[in-house]
Each structure stands twice: as C-alpha cells, then as structure tokens.
Length: 403
Image (cartoon, rainbow, N blue to C red; front, side, top):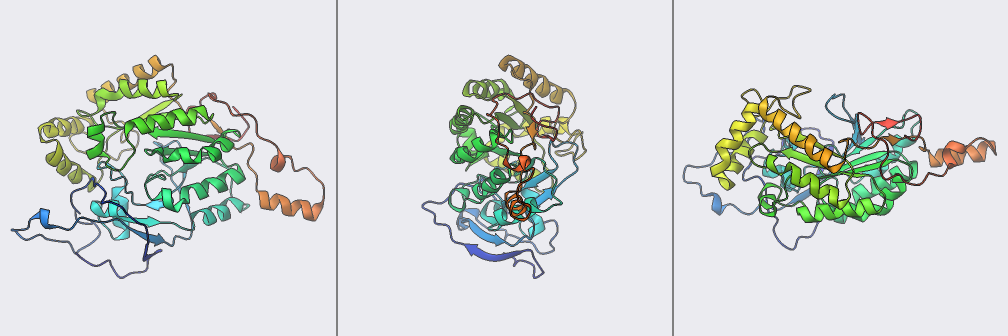
C-alpha cells in the first residue's frame, strides 16, 4: 500500500483506541485508485484476494477548525450541515459520500469504511459558532454526509454532545440516520421538539434482511429502524421515513411496503431519492453486483442508465436525486400513491427558530444591565406538536414563529 501524502493537513493521523469483539462485515471489496493521487496499488497476476488480511477499522482525530458546512444546492432542503465524522463504518456500498474520502488521501472503497475521521472537538466548535453574533439561527442538518449514528458513536458520543449544544441554544436540527442508536437521544430530541426544533428521518432502503446484510452491512436491521420510528413518534418527535436510495430493478418494488410499514410504526411524512453513483462509487457498485447479485446486474445497470441519459451518474441539479424518463416517473408515481394511502403529504414539518437563545450571552447581559427584556432567552417552549403543518421545503426554518 502507498503511504499517505506528506502535505499540510487539518487532521492528525493518531489512532483513537476503540475495542472490537469481532471483525465487522464490509460493503466494498477493494480500494479503487484515488483520482487525485498518482501512486496506486497494482496487484500481481497471481494475486489471491483470499490471502489478504481482513481490514480492521481505525479511527483518527480530525483537527478541523470549524464544524459547520454550507451548500447552495437547490436539490437539498437545507444549506447548513454538521458532520461529526468523515467516513462511515456502516459500509453502504452505494454511499454517495465515498468520494469525499479521496480529498483526505484515502480511497472511496474499503478506506471509507475502515479509516474514520472523528471530530472530537465537534461540540466545542459548534458552541463557538452558535455563540457568535454573526450566527443567524437556521436549521442545521445532522449530518448530511456520513451517518451521525454510525457504530463508533455509541462509544464516542460526539453526536450526542452536539445535540446537547443544540438543545441548550434551541437551534433547530434535522437528522437522517439508518441506525436505531438515535433512540438513545430521545431526551434531547424531545426537548428540541417541544420548541418545534427537531425532526428525524429514518432511512430505509429495503425490508429484506438478507439484502440489507450485503447492501448496508453494519446498519441497523429494518425491524430495528421501524422500532426507532415508533420510539421517536411515541416521544412526540416528528419522524418520517427516507426511502433512499431507491435502486431501480432491485428495491423499487418495495416502496409501498416500506411506506406502509413506516406509517404503521408512527411515521408522519416521507421523502425519497434515486440511486446515484458519482466517481468511484460506480465501479464499486458494479463490482458489488458481480460478487453478490450477478443475475440481476444487467437489469439494475440498464435501469440506472435509462434514468441517467446512458450513464450511471448525472450531477445535474434538479435531476441527480430523481433521474428522468419512464422509470423515474414510475418510481415517483409509486411513491406518491403509497404516501397518499398512508395519508401523508410527503413533506417534513416546518421547523422554527423562534425560541433560539444564546444562554451564556443572555446571562452576561443580565449581570451588566440588570433587569430588561430577555423574553427571547427565557421564554418557555410550547408543547410538542406531533404533526405540524408542512412547508414546501420541509427542512427550512420558519423564523417568523411556530407554524
């Protein structure tokens, strides 16, 4: 294997110790070349992949100096996101975030699943940003790239630490996860929901447990995700299902069953996206089909190319999340019909910044000026609303007040 490039970096490659009782399953079967690097690994002709050592997960401290990321994509319902981790041990073979690992000098393949950057200062950095007078309260997506509740979160609790800060400031947050671990933080999410400042999407790709094991090897099983939906709904936290990614020719027929199961569990809204395979994700996914589902490979790739103008990926805004053509229309109609049967609008609830506060700043102001108008900082939140009125862009905040 090649060495990491010797250049200035915002992170320090010092492993974080995390104990393991058994080797984890993996989604990728190899490390494709990094598109930014000149050195790659070439196997000998007589190489036997079965002789390779099993890749173990390593965790590295990420020394990023800021924690919030911004985007101007018209395809997303948020423009600000927070990522406590880079890389994801869930190992979903289709993950669009895999190419981001190449910016760190790693591969989109096994490296993405086995070399995880952890931002130990995430909560501290978040507090600094929310305390700044320049911060305008808005919805923060947690995380937007890799899953904030991936397995190592159970030990490091970086996501929980960030939620504690968000709850203290009452800043609205949306979460997308495939892991039942989100139920650990019901207390904080319920506190935010009481201020109309939290919504959770549980991502469900398939209800087939066998397919899940090879497609998303270290995610929670479908039943556990539905149990998370039920727990969140019971706690009064707005919760919906993200049917994503829909894989044409493989999982698209499951859309009605996923929506029905999520509705029965207590979900109140839904969204969906269609599989996209940017950069190295395309050959990784093709390799995965060859290894696990060779009989379905041609059908799946044909459907994907029909959605993407003959390619496996299309980055054009307005089309990259849905595709186009007859198969895209079929998926969209199937989703819409399933949502109508569930009694859903298909939109997430509008969130509010009305109760945002800067606790430390408010206390300082009280000491300096005595009594005064501190209603915004001290106002009690209303009771949580289970089915708030949805907005066209479901993750957008409503700075005018409670919808």
